[in-house]
Amino acid sequence: QVQLVESGGGLVQTGGSLRLSCTASGSVFRMGWYRQAPGKQRELVASMTTRSMTNYASAVKGRFTISRDNVKNTAYLQMNSLKPEDTGVYYCYADATVIGRTYWGQGTQITVSS
Image (cartoon, rainbow, N blue to C red; front, side):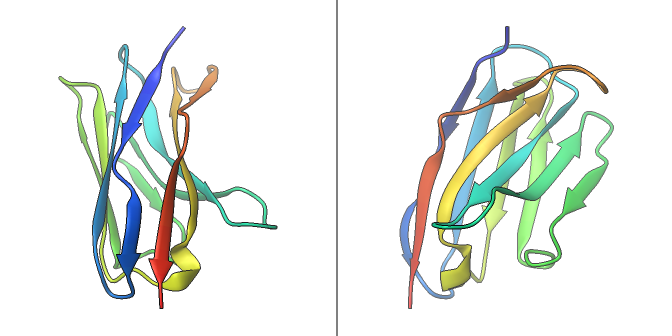
């Protein structure tokens, strides 16, 4: 069983920046974030493996950067040039192994005001 603890988030104006952190209770293969806006499906934002392979949603490429500290089992999501459409609940997730179980954080609200 892996537990994820998220931090960061909050309210920011358009064009501002925020950083999310997510710490896993053990070593995991992939970490990242999904987000869910009101009335919309949850969508992948960014992910990163222990081998530093990354994946970004096209909507955030060039604005968001994911990084990891594998020693601390912590992932970070630096979000710059935030837009109102980035508003939503951001959920950290982790895949224990390549084809293993997925674990979820508690979610954190991000609101970007126009």
